[in-house]
Length: 84
Length: 154
Image (cartoon, rainbow over all chains, first blue to last red; front, side):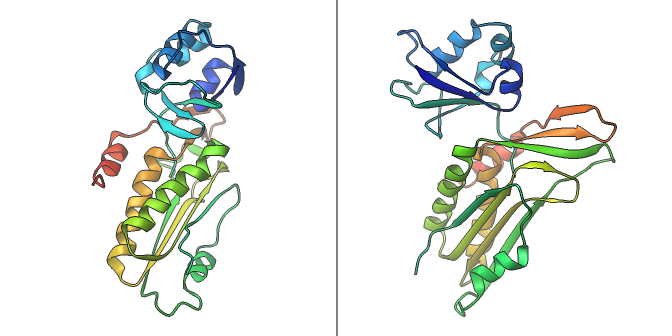
C-alpha cells in the first residue's frame, strides 16, 4: 500500500485529503501514477486532466514526473504553489 | 557560531522587531539587516480573506532547504524565514524573511533569493474568500515567479 496525499484544488476535485492505495505493478513512475489515477473516477479525471501541471513530492521532496515511485512512503499531488 | 537558519511555519502573526533583534542583539559584527514582509493584498475591495493551505510535513523542510542554500551562497550571520497558514485578512502579514550580514549586498541578495524560491517551491496554496460571502478561486501561480527563481540558477 502507498499513501497518497492531495492538496488545494487537487484535493477538492478528488474529494479526499489522503488515501492508501494498492498500485498495480506496472505503475512504476510518477507519470504512470498520474495516468492510472485518472481512470479511478470522475473526480480523479477532473483533478488530473492536465497532468503536466500537477506537481509531485515523494517523501516530502519535489520530484519530476520521470521519478520512480518504488519504495515511496508518501506521494503528494498538488497544483503549482502560490505561497509567499 | 551556529549558522543554522531559523524556519517557522505557524498560524499566528510574527513580530518583525523581535525577529530582527534575535539576529542582532549581542552581535556587533552584524552591519546589515534586510527584512521582507509579504502581506495579504486586496485589489478593489472584493477579498474578505485568503485561506492558506500548506503541506505540514514538507513546508518547513522545503523552506529550510532553500534557507540552507542561501546560507551556503552568501556570507550571512543569520537568516530567518516565517510563513503563516490559515485564514489571513487583507493587510495582515503572510511571510517574513530576515537576512543579516556584515555588509548589505549579501543580505539584500539572500533575502531576494529566499523569497523567489519560496514562491515557487514552498508547498503553500492560497484560496480567496470573497467579501460578498461567495467562495472565491484558488490563486493561480504566475510564470513571472518561476522566472524570478530561475534567475538565481548558477
